[in-house]
Image 1 (cartoon, rainbow, N blue to C red):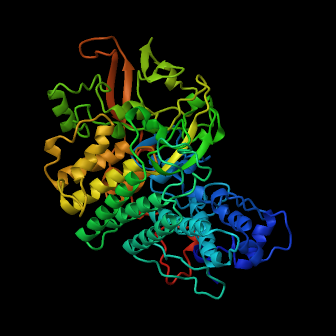
Image 2: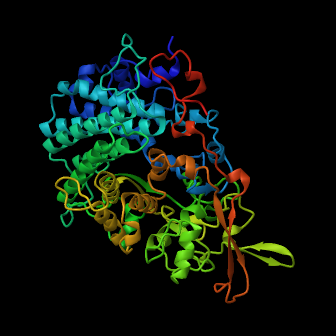
Image 3: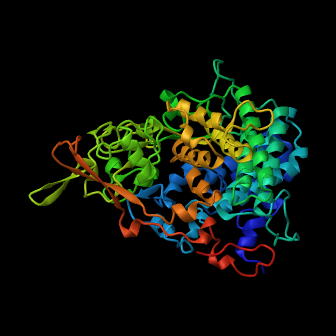
Length: 616
């Protein structure tokens, strides 16, 4: 008898067994009775309700299966959960206000809590959700020929969405659990379930192929984008804006091939990088053809906060509005802002991350040598460390003395009075969820708090044009060098990187760092970290596909100790800034098994063809 993983993997019996049970599931939520497969799949209204379950996750059959939906693959939805950690908090990028599961995982132990990310419908069961919607998509494609009262546009739209979401689900499974069988048929009880895994590259190439198919169907349906372009009535307001498009499919194809070319997955050397560069350039051209563009720096935050959708987002999930004390914010947002003394945690950038933000003149600050060079140039002062930095620093990070609505200038310091430490307002020790790094995350915070009771809109930019330029820069640099171009491209790797920097009002990469593939690679990695930080879990996946995780996760997490002192020549701001390691219980440990999540321990037995991941 096969164990539960194989059941979940190929035929999710706990969710949906055969086509007959699909209809039964539909009947559970339909007002009519006596529906047959023909009723479900031949009528547009019923077909759409069946298919849209992948988005809505509203399947009820006596248990709470509402979590089994595509949103489980969205990073922001993952952040909005009660376990109080984000993907970034599982790296050196950030620390959580409270020591909870995040620290357990960062220390290399996850087997006891992996069920929360696999099957548990009350948490974020990504594994179960992705296989559930893969089956939904395959069932949709199998039965699309039964649909009678739909136009060719509607049919091609369904086909495009089904191919896209199937590929997206396989991609999310791949990033977290590694290579998988690529499931394109509805498997039954008599089929072989113990299916071998593909290679890493093969999995990603199949994803890219499915995205290409999706794009072809969307193009036939004239749905390369769903809303009118800029300047036309209805721009960004299509009622179906949540659904993917042909442009998004081409963008995801490029992302999949970039992963395939990366050191963790590369099998064909430079040829894989060339394929990724070509796909990325194609995606950029198509996105620009259909009117997508980078937002200005003034509007930059509209990519993820304060608006429903933006014209830089190629596909996005609108999460709605959240009040300052919403329960699903208490993982991402700190207790001192949410007014929760004990229940809140909050994401706090480390000094390691802050050091990745360059000076406004483009000088790196990653290492002591970098900082000494910037000091020698008169562009950095380690006792006035937040002056003259990359403009995105002020958008993304709350630092001591930063302006914060409702708090004036942020008080993230302590001072000594009568031999005792007295803490500033944002280090109020009566809260469990306060920063231990000296910083709070601003980028996706929304600036709401107990002192500023707003209800901002949240949107998850699942893929945006800014990423495409970075993807092209990375792939083109590896394939052709800093000044090389993909065939037919009008932009070099260096120019694509500088396109993102220009939008941020940053200078071009300094010549010293653009003279070779190796040097530019470091700046591309740094730029990705800054441009995409706290957004989409990119950094978590990037350090793995680059195979940088052993090094960066084997280092020391650093905090900034801020003490209020008298203003002096040495301390011009009236604060003494000292870099110090975070406490031992907040450091990270790396194991090779941590490249991928394990499956539940109970699922490790009786597998012959499907080789499971190592438990850690």
